[in-house]
Structure formats: C-alpha cells, structure tokens
Length: 196
Image (tube, rainbow, N blue to C red; front, top):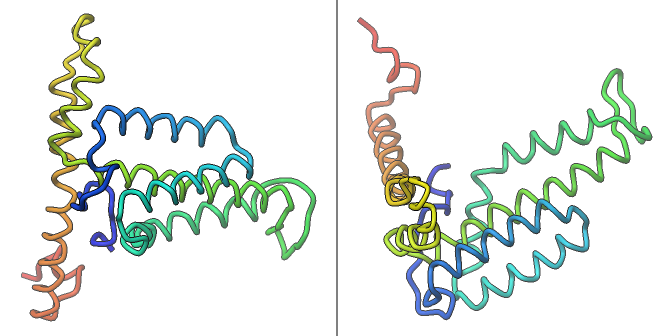
C-alpha cells in the first residue's frame, strides 16, 4: 500500500514542467488547491480536471504512475463517500432501517470525492516534478519575507524537505519488513507482541 503513494516521490524526466522555477510550481499548486476549496461546483472541478490532464501531458509523467497514488487513499475515500451518502439529511432515495440514502448525500459525496481525488493528484504533481532540494529552496525563497517577523523560514522549509525525503524511505523499510515477515511466516501481531 505504501509503495502506491506518489506524494514525496520525484519522477525524473525532461519536461517543461520539470524545468519551471519551484516558486512558480508552489504558487500554482497553492492556487489550484484554493480554487478547489473556494469553488465547490461540478463545473469548477471539471475545469480543474482538464487543467490537471494538460499538466500531466506536458510533464511527461505516465498517467498510470500518477493514478497509482490514488490506490493508497481508496479506503479513506470510500469511507468518506459512504458516510456522506448515507448520513447526510435530505430527500430520501433509499431507506434500509436507520440508514437512508439521500439525494443531497449523493451530490455531497460526489463533489467531496472529486475534490479529494483532484487534491491528491494536484499535490502529487508538485513533488513528482520538483526535487526535494529545489522544493526546499523555492519554499524558503517564497516565504523569505517572513524572516522580518522572526519566523524561522529556513527551518520550516528544511523540516518539510526532510519529511518528503522520508516518505520513500519509509515505503522501502515497510516492504523489507513485510518480506522478512513473510519469509519467517510471522503475522503482524506476532511481530509486534513477541512470545516469551
């Protein structure tokens, strides 16, 4: 599951998006996320999806690689959609005991699901097209004005860089632990609670 996470990974290829200044990519990602949360209607989400498809094509990152990152959030997405569909008050479409599917719940779940998917893909594109060092430098330069009010911008940017670098490391460690446990035929509970 962790190997399907694309946030924090860098996909090296020669594209115009990769060559952009990191500050431009940070600002564009921030504006994209802001647009997702401010304008919550299907037309806006459709425009955002078209923008993402265009950026993915220009960045030369395979669609399969990007959409692989959605597998890791499928459970969270499913639970969120389920609760919105069945527990949002409104006009009842289907009823089974205390569980009611409402029209308003379906609309809310669809919009929330689209927003969540677009948010994950949009933020993944930032890290897939920008090295951690460039991302740190871009963040530090973008927020440099905050040094005037004594906010430690360099330290904040460094912490984000370290966190992003450890995502792939954690993925590899988890895969190695899983392989070792399979070889030794241990379950997770036996691994976490050793028998004396």
